[in-house]
Length: 433
Ligand code: C2O
Ligand code: CU
Ligand code: CU
Image 1: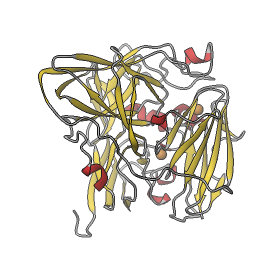
Image 2: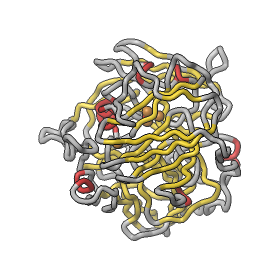
Image 3: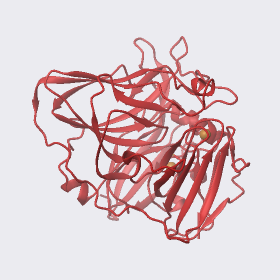
Image 4: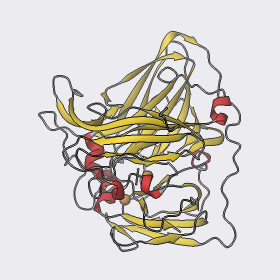
């Protein structure tokens, strides 16, 4: 805690090398290290101050994905940090407990910077999450899982072409999965219930997550916070940028593999295949000890927050994502403000994805999915979110509550979080007035 009463965090974006594959040194980027960055933990009501120093060879930025904060603190393309410079964003945390993340957002180069390794977890705690009997021993029964797929060249360097790159594609796909930067990982499970905070930190890969033995798990949180109650699932699909928190129960001595299964992305053949829909990827092996310490099962209720609803006269805005670079027929232009939103407004945003699978992320807000193709979303997707998967050809309706930090001069972004699409221009800008 600094003299000004704020809590300081020092982050340094830096280059390095990492041995992902035995005997091969991969050139990587990271935060306070050679790959990925530290988990940052903040509390609702806290004044946070972060110093981000850029020791990379080119300008970059650090965006607090899922955080409600003034646009000048957002870390998007308007807050790029030149090499050797330090940027000092600070804000008050005004949102409930959630699993957020941070990543670079330089204009047109987000995919490359994330792929090289600049990302980390950003956890928010509050009194409600503290009071719940959830596993919360970080690294013991509360485990962050940053899932990323990589393609490597023969000499062990990151391959930026990867499989799947090219016109009409969703972006780089790799056939090697890393979890928290580790290839072929396992987790020693020491308690009966383990909480997994899962982030899809990949540029393009859409995972259909489930265990090899189809064991059920309880979903307790989505992107922006706890669900009203746990939802039992055996599978769920997570697109880039989305997070879920899961509780997995194990018996002593058991093993189970968290895996991504073949899935339907709505694009049919061959678009789905090019987007990786046919792939099976092992992500993490859970190995339970022969004796497990008991910890409580999932509480029956989690968040008591009222679900977001829209007034009858809510403004409706429509967005069509098309090709790899367009929203409503236009590509991102930093000189053009696309949407002007009244401070604190609740609106309906209707987003249609044409052709390819896409997703949609809005800065500064949490939203609730009203419908996907006219139907209510499954319960695990009905909570607070900031990123939504849009199968090819589908339409999602969102109720969105905007923030109150007025700044007509500094926009926030909304975009497809398939990073190749984002970088190609599938992004727009809104200001709060
Ligand atoms: Cu993950 Cu524009 O952000
Ligand atoms: Cu964001
Ligand atoms: Cu897209």
